Length: 375
Image (tube, rainbow, N blue to C red; front, side, top):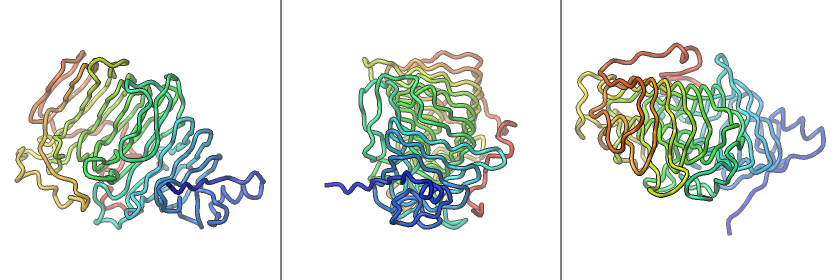
C-alpha cells in the first residue's frame, strides 16, 4: 500500500500565520518544513488546503501534490531548488491551483540544488499542471510517473497562474525513457494563465501539452535535451511568442526537434494548436561548425548520470498522426531538416540560417547562463 501524507492547513489564525511565515515544523504537517524545505521527501506528499510559500530560498524534496480544492501561492522572487536524490517534483492536480506570479524584476525560479558549475539536465523532476479539459484519450495518467490522472469535459478549466517563472535542469526520469518535462501541461484549460516562462536544460521536452486548451504567451526553451515544444493528445490552444535556442552538442536518442506534434489517428479532439510569432534557432545557428553526428553531439560535459542517451537532430518541425497544426509568423533557422511528416497550415513561415537574436520581450527576466548563476 502506498504511504500517503496529507498536508492539512489548520483553520486557526495562528496556524495560518505560521504557514505564511514559512515557520512550520514537521508536526504542523504543512508544505513547508522548518524554514526552507518544501515537502518531506516522500513521493505522495499531498496538500489539501490553501497554503502560501513566502519569498525565500527553499529545497523541494519528493513529489508534492496540490490536490483538488487546494491552492498553492508562491510569492515573487522565490527560488525553489529541486532535490536530486528524491527526484523532486511539484504536481498540481485537476481541481487544484497554483498561483506563481513573479515579476520581470523578481521572477520565481525552480532550479537544481547543485552548486554552480555542477548542474546538469535532469537534476530534479519538474513542474506539472493537470486539469479537466478535454484530450483525445479520456482520463489519462500524466507522463513521467506521478499518480495524477487528468482529462475531462471542461475546456474552460482553470489551473491557476504561472507568470515570470524559470524552470532549470529539470527532467529526472522515473525510469529509462520516462522523464518528466520541464513544464508538463495535461488537459489544462483555457482559463489558466501562463506567460513569461523559460525552461532551460530540460532532460526531456521543455514544454509538452497533453490535450487541453490553455493558450500561453512568451515561452522560452533553452538548450533542451529533446523537443522544445511538444503537443499531443488533442491539444488545441494558441501559443504565442515562442523562442527556442538549441545547444549544438545536445540531442536526444529519440531525435530532437523544435516542434513535435502527434495525435491518435481517429481520436477526437484532434491535435490542432496554433503557434504564433515563433523564433527557432537550431544547432547550426549556435555553432557554424555543427555536424549532425554522434561524434560531434557529445553532451559537452552535460551528460547526466541517469541513463539518458544522446542522439541526433531531426527536422525543426515534425508532425504526425492526423494533426492539424497552424503556424503563423515563424522564423526557423539552423536545423538539418526543415520539416517532416504531416502538412500544416502556414502563414508567413520562413526557414533560414540566421544566428541567434533575442526578442526584446526576454529582457530582464530571462537567464541564459543558469549553469553559473549563484542562487
